[in-house]
Length: 460
Picture (cartoon, rainbow, N blue to C red):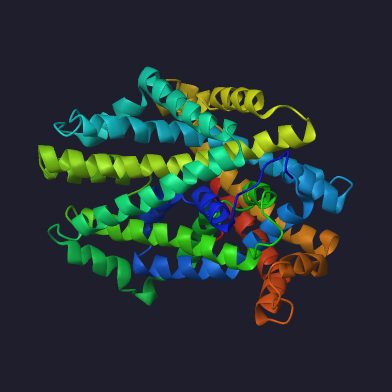
């Protein structure tokens, strides 16, 4: 373990793992899904899914990594033998493709941070047209995406303690400070109370199968489960640490960022009444319009802070996504870390070029004929959504039928003397044996038919 590196303490692990979970999904995707699904009604479902479905899977994934002391492929191979290592490789490949498009979107956020901070964007008349033109500017987005990937590689190349842990100890507290500051300001805006009511006062009649579907999908995506990230981070955890309590803190930290993001965003969108906004339009069009209305000085300060927040959230995730394939090559191929980091980062950027070109530059990539005329970036994003739920389902099956629940519980009892006789052990065991694989299996089927065959098996 000394050669591989390790987290210096429990706080270092929690901040790194929470940073892995916290990302654009919390600050961008969570608010727009909440807006489309009734606000508070979606929040209730999301919170239930986090702690009933995602928490047990997180505990199991970290336990596998700590027990095996290896990357995702090596962990499955050591504990399962045979061809189980390919399940870890499946997660590693999924993480590579997630990072390939994630880095493109991070480039958008970084570009907007600069544009607003220097005041270039706030004088625009049509923010929708500007956004469409901006992401179609391959030259400028390439520069920002390369810059973001270089920054990610710089951190990961420094190793676990000096790179990943140190960076998250700076960025995670900074992220919370910016987020809280923006919330305080947003609550002073006109009609802010209407946005708060929409977000915090649930109308349970608005809960339907679509709400359940989106809440479950967002919860699982939000915590970065099923692709080996937390398994890899778990392999750097000391045996004395309490995995269960650490996983609880990570879940709370990730959920709190999503919750606070909603508390920041909905008072802002209440000013323009655009609760039900799809995808990037919420952040890059609606909120930018709100920032513009604040005036040249306040708009630059608030808007710049918001996109800096997005950049921090994206960077904590890109760091963890890059570490997964790097750990595999370092552990399995015995390659030196720094050359592996830079080589892998370069390859992932190249893999992301089709996503970069799918915003209008290349017609085929912008309108895939086999994917309902949608763009390549959306295709990769949906593929990754599906791969995470399949990976999570298979992880539960692996624990139950190959590694065995008893072995997982023995690992969880290390550093947690009261675990074996607790109700928590029964809850985690039952969830991983029955609840999680069944629900994740159903979710995988729903995503497959909805996204790839255009068949909606759910109804409102």
